[in-house]
Image 1 (cartoon, rainbow, N blue to C red):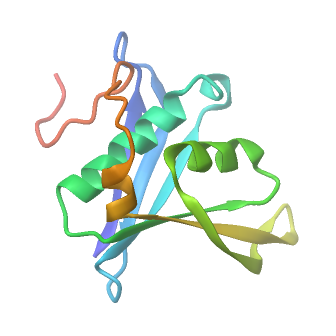
Image 2 (spheres, rainbow, N blue to C red):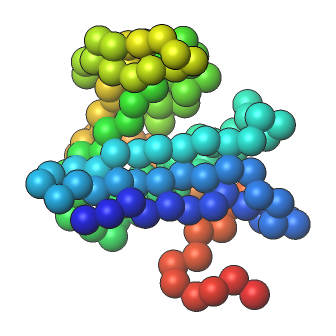
Length: 138
């Protein structure tokens, strides 16, 4: 199906902070993989959690996705905390699932189901990001 990407912008001045993506495969159309990255200077300020929550929420609200997965390396404690805070659950470890700086590393696989997402408290913040649905920004 494809990869859908959103640029994360600061609402006040539209400073680019990073990106969030959902990738939907050809054979597993009821699930997607979440990806995200923020510029180092904008990490640990809540922008990543807010942006990923907005994209996950939109993914469940505007599609028939049953599950969204996310992956990170064990050493990326900030990403692990973000996924835990959003309610993702670690389901498995893929041994030597990626190569980082020339060496194989284990990948932690996280999962969020539509039912779990719908049952979690919604904070409704969205103060720092804008995710336009279709129109080109002015």
